[in-house]
Image (cartoon, rainbow, N blue to C red):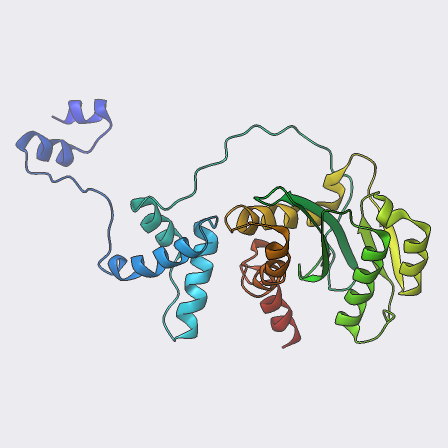
Length: 275
């Protein structure tokens, strides 16, 4: 028996139990409290079907801690979601390697703001375009602008810049210089826009041509907005969508767990820093 066990690489006692037929199959691991967690997990998954287990775990623990309950290990959330077919399908597409020479992340708020835009088509064929400004440290969307069936103009960008400064500082000029990073779109590179930015104490910075990864912070938010809001919410027409965008941005700022912020939302992260 020992020789056979050594050859198979198993313990002799285990082999003996198998021969006698007294060993029991362990089966999938399960805790008694899993059944209590399942309804709450399913509720969050139904509300936010694009969230993976890490963000679902963050929302679940945020709710439990607010009611005085203990946090749940995210690996346990993964196990429960896997057992109930609630995990997202793995992304298997091959990506081409790209060189990233720029550094977007900064060490505190209001050092660098990033800006970009996106467009999407409503069900009736109307096109909505959105531009935004995001802080490269705390990830809050400070200001945004949206238009239907038209392009983002320099005037739209300048209004957005002014709103961002007023929201952050309650004045019309930033107290310290802030880098404003964007692509080379004409709305950003226009002379009037650059002069207006300087008047607000913003330093216009532009990514290299054909290098969207140099503004990765903005690109990440574009992906989040499309994945977690645009693709799963009704888009009947431009008028309806324009009324909804403010709610999407507010939900992102207040609720969306961000891995770089230790699964806190941007507003939660800012509040924690101020305390």
